[in-house]
Image (cartoon, one colour):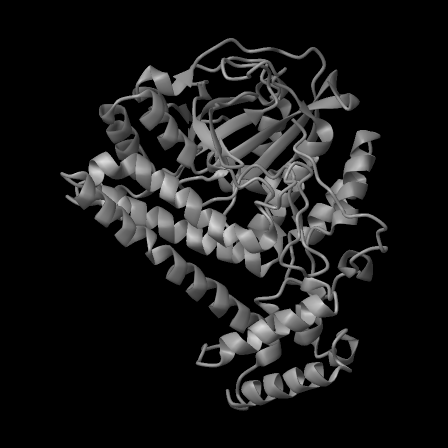
Amino acid sequence: MTTDLNFEATYLELHDMFYDRGSIYPVDNPTLALFNDTLATSIGLDATSLKRDIDLLAGNRQTETSFSQAYAGHQFGHFTMLGDGRALMLGEHVTPDGTRVDVQLKGSGPTAYSRGGDGRAALGPMIREFIISEAMHALGIPTNRALAVVQTGEAIMRQGPKHGAILTRIASSHLRVGTFQYATAFGSIDDVTALADYAIGRHDSDLTDAPDRYERFLGRVVERQAKLIANWQLVGFIHGVMNTDNMFISGEGLDYGPCAFMDTYHPETVFSSIDREGRYAYANQPYIGSWNLARLAETLLPLLGETKEDAVDVANRQLTRYTELYKEAYFTGLAHKIGIDVRKDGDDALTDELLRLMMETESDYTNTFRSLTLGEIESLPFAKRDDGKAWIDAWRKRLSDQGPDKDVRQFMRQHNPAVIPRNHHVEKAIQAAERGDFGPTEALLMILRDPYNYDKPSEYVSAGPPRTYPYQTFCGT
């Protein structure tokens, strides 16, 4: 166990077009609001010591390895130059077992890429990121994670004055599809090659000497994204802003701003206040994943073949794998959620019919599967409908085909979370934190870190009081 972050900065070996090493913007009165002791310990740090280093977590101390990243991206389908407008990479921490992780501050002040913004962040959105990323990790879904939230002691102006805050987050890397788009748009083929080699070294080092490493690297990213988005769908998660700059090469989720977990099941559900056309609605997430991967493939074309035609063929060979990979992960996951261990012909139709019943009866997504897991069939909104009864009979028959030795209930508990970050609890935690009370946040985190435990207080299982208007989330920029 070490008390200090062991920083390196291999990213700075790339062309300096990929980053900026500008000034820091200290805050006068930082205080620690939240800290992730378990995460600190898992990356080989002494939590007690790090919590005392408030200047580091507040961005008040320049490190020799600090920088902000440049990248581009398609935001709601429109290409634009971007970059870390309010983020500072402190460095790449090398853990005692040799694992390399990025340590980044969000809300630490303006950078060369701020585009007129103040570079700061409000407390509420940083609390949301902390809660959602910890929930994702506990659900077993790849994600960046929050290490700390520091209050800056300063007010920032959003829709009125807000408490300023800085989030420290940990990720396998912050390489994005948008990083490759930036290299292609503003650099040379050498820059794209260097970035691809760097990404392979960070995430797929076994491919380093492979003659077809760029094609196989693209294939690995395709695989990771297909599984990630399938996992999002299976827990009813809606990211809200699946721009290419919000898509990590590592297959981890990031930037949990206007996101939420679906309560009432409907494929067209949108939570983001800025997604007015439903581009990133729940049902569209798998298609957007494919679209984003196509943008990555475009940047790699010079590395995939001697001619453009050859390169396009190689790219398409990998891109076409996405749909089948996604469907396999998603439909297998759905089968597991209703207790089917080995998926067979007809099972996809069975789960499709369940989803139709859920949509027509405005069933709660998580609690439908929870009720099935617990055998509380009568509580299902569609249980008394003729088509609902028919589905229940077909489901029971399918489970009986697996044999008497199969512990279906225990199997289903492993695939159906008992609790998710319910929107009303997240909002309650944020509102309390903005009043200086972090008790509700800590209590919610304790529940969410054990999501498959079915002995939860009922208040965390309930979808909450009925709403008279759609729930909306905001970027918090």
